[in-house]
Length: 258
Length: 268
Image (cartoon, each protein chain N blue to C red):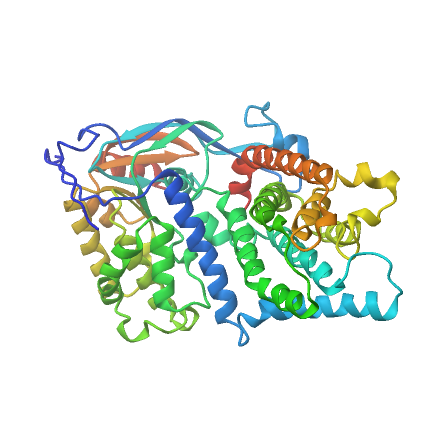
């Protein structure tokens, strides 16, 4: 059931941040071959630093107000995806904190939740359900989801028999219908043909117009300009610049100039 | 400029415990659906598996060896512990792959991570309940009658759930870091099968082992299950030991799990 929440009645005011990241950091071990001991594993997060530690992201702080559209830029391996995973809460920070108020619709590894052996129908119910959508609501939106993904004739086909384009379309369709207040997008729009990409863009525009918060990772300046108003520039695991998207793109361009 | 009017159409999402329960149920239903939709015999495997096992042990212990342990009818005695054992065995050995098998799914959803263990225990538990008709049929054929202790059946289910979840919470995250544990667990389970009163009764153990056997939580648990047919099997000392050890294992499991969760999510 869809219950529109009147703005005044909502517990949060429009300017209370929906995402609060405070000096967050995440640590990996540089040397995977290094022996790990039980003591190491269970001694909690406050253990002393080790020389072979590597921080893909460290001391990153920012807040996001509801309805903001944020683009994350940076070269490969500078922590963009890690940041997105922190916000999606599929990894936990080793330092600092990440607070996310409200549900998240993550377009990261979107096909991950689908099961090869089950039909498209079962998969839609399963994936949407795992992201917290009530069964009745899924049933109401089912036709809409299938129509958007353009796989009308394959509702009872096992998922594994779909083409990879169909899989990506279905995944985008399900996740983008979750009606969650925060949308995370990680370069998934590179999949699919141009026609479908345009449809995805239109859908994101629609969600943004509806007041959703967008967190967008991309290498495409065009896309970043199209959706985002604010940019975060990550370099070597730290947040170098947080400002209007134009300024961020400019600095990124001048930094990467050969 | 950001617009001043923010209109977010949110939908009612269940939170907390209700969300946990719904997600747990969803994944369990998925497990069962995958298992039953990918095999032609479907549900009958839930019956066939214990039936063949029981057949083998029945043949060995009543036809080949001269048996002076257990109670009559032996097949009922055997099944009343063998079926819960298969639940325990199945859930614990599956928990070694709880995160490895579902890595993609764990990476893409932020549901409470203990669900990955809970759903294994629940789906194996449901299979156990599905297999109970086998026991009922043999009880009727063998002329075994229920005792009043059947009221303890829910307690037995509860203890077994606590015990299995506890062990699962210890095993599942550790296997991700130490793959050897997978082999070790398989070996331990084989040992436990004979170290627990399944083909024999707890009262068949030498008196000197009685106190020690209470340390094995399965001993008291199986005594409890068996008391619904065989009153003599109920031994409150063993049941008490089983409860204490099970709860302790659950607490250790929760601790291990919460301590290793952070590293676990990075590893898979």
